Amino acid sequence: MHPETPPPAPAQGVGASLSGWADRSFVVLGVESSCDDTAAALVRMDPQGATILADIVAGQADVHAGFGGVAPEAAARAHAERLDTVTARALQQAGLGLDSVDAVAATAGPGLIGGVIAGLVFAKAVALARGLPLVAVNHLEGHALSPRLVDPVAFPYLLLLVSGGHTQLLVVEGVGRYVRLGTTIDDAAGEAFDKAARVLGLGFPGGPAIDRLAGTGRPARFRLPRPLLGRPEPEFSFAGLKTAVQRVAAELPAPLDEADRADLAASFQQAVADVIEDRVMRAVTLFVDGWRPDRLRLVAAGGVAANSAIRARLMALAERQGGQFVAPPARLCTDNAAMIAFAGGERLRAGLGRQTGGLDAAARPRWPLDQANPLMATGRKGARA
Image (cartoon, rainbow, N blue to C red; front, side, top):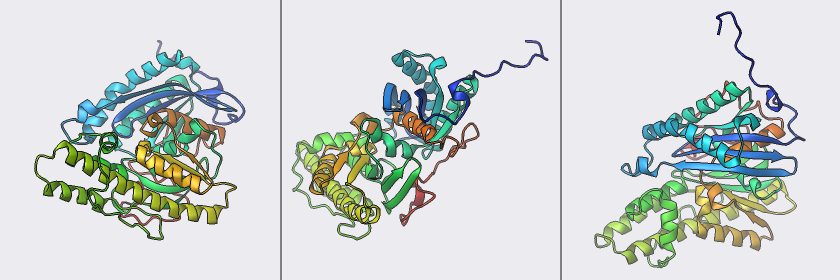
């Protein structure tokens, strides 16, 4: 190209503006890389709802097997190597080309900063090359809105957001409108699951392994603590429970036999379920008294929301209160790009596409979902928790 020849203009079309999305159909490419899953998805947003056209997740269990957890630098390198591949696979699964994509949504935080940067920079490059708007998405908002991908649950609803890095109770008033009722004062529930699984020799990630093993165990065999049970504030604590599992395991003959492992897994899982049920019930009271919904809508999201015992408890709780319990399928509870694409699409439809930034958006290791209106925030890990 001659030096004086201007570069070709980026493609124009529906994605050329961040306004006017409410009453049209459009396709969003989502990118997720906040922890150890590299993911890309395509979601079609219609006035009547949303459809997942493709959803690809490349796990990194092989990368982190020797670390006993997620190694941030290794995760970032793996994301950088796999983002183009998972995006190409998503486009192939949907039977679409990039010319059919109208907007790009990418996780901009919170998460492991190297991975967040890798995904966000990749998404910016795609958006810039194609002349598409980029919506920077809070990973927690992806989880918070994910149940609406499969069930048109009405606002407001009470959300239990429970994952490897986060345990929160929030009121979801609408897209971009969140009020935190309680959080964890130390470890997140998912972190406790992973560390308990390590004690039991179950590997990483620990949540699904404990859920499977607990089904064959006796939950009444070991007496484990129920931290904060009965407290008026709907907050959580799992550090003491995690330590209790380590103590009980150390007192048993080594190595643990299959019955010991199953019983300890079942005892631990029941303790977590007891705590979550009690804390959620306290939040239900605050939600009903403060927001006066026409009906209780209790929603669970995040990786731990896939746990069968916790789901059963929350479903029974909602039924006792004459309410509705909603949780996305297990594959949408863990980290995925479909929820990121959907959250970006919801922001566009609500006219909030610019609120979290576009091509100038910065990657954030911490990004509280309720930064504008936190009702409670006493956890020592603060916004990250």
